[in-house]
Length: 146
Image (cartoon, rainbow, N blue to C red):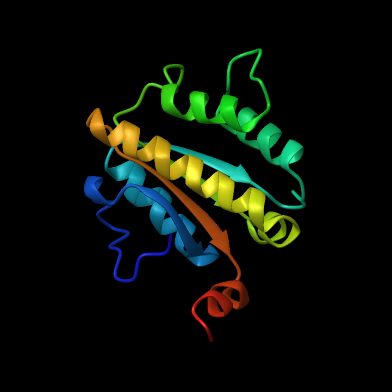
């Protein structure tokens, strides 16, 4: 999910998917995405420790239609549609992702996989989609084996 050497100022459409980043990278990512004309949405995961809260936060931030099923299949379907968020690309900035990752790594990994799959589906239609999950320095160091 992390990409060494990923050029955040370009947001290359061939590098779509989910990425783990430092919290300090989010303002630069938002600016780069806005400059490129991409739709930017922030999803704050502060205090989010379970799947139900996670899905609710995503649904609100991405303005999912009424009747969103609040399960993984419904999330996958919604991420592949997004017709209510017209844009020439999407950048989702997940702030404070540590709590969710620490509380339920399996659900966190499922979310990353669903986003990667949706990003691949969008890329086939010529529309880039990225999701950036801000983790603390300590969490990123642990992932890098430091």
